[in-house]
Length: 171
Image 1 (cartoon, rainbow, N blue to C red):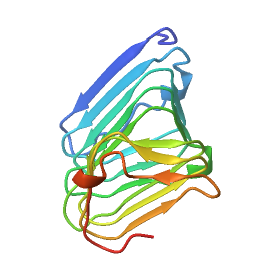
Image 2: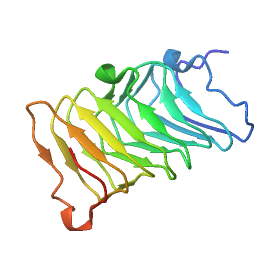
Image 3: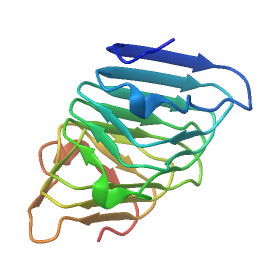
C-alpha cells in the first residue's frame, strides 16, 4: 500500500512503546499532521508539511531530522522536555509556534527563519534561537530563565508584553 497522496494524517497511540511511522518523509503531499502519544515520547524524523503540525506527547518531544512546517506548529509534552534543536539550523517553522510543558523541564527550539511565538506556557527554562526576527502573537509564561537569540535581527516581545510572565533571568 502506498500513502504518497495522503494530505492530512492523525496518529494517536496510547501505548508506552509507540513510535512514529518510518515513512513520514515519503508522504510528499502531506499537508497537516496531528500526533498524540498519550504515554510515549515523540521523536520526529525529517518531515515536510505544507500545512500545520500538532504534537501531544506523554514523553519528551525531540527530533532526529529537520522539520519544515509552512503552517502553525503546536508542541505539548506534559511534564516532559521539548528539544527541537538537534537539526535546528535546518528547521523551518513558518507559522506561529505554540510550546507547552510543565515541571522542571526545559523547552528549546531553533528555527532557520523568523520565529513567531503563539501563546505558550513552559515548565521551566525557554531557549529560542532564530535565524530571523523573533516576535509573538500571544502571551509567554516562563517561570525559569528565558534566552532569545536572533543574530542581527529584531526581538520584539512587546505585542502581549503586559501579559507576558518572565520570572527568571532573560538574555
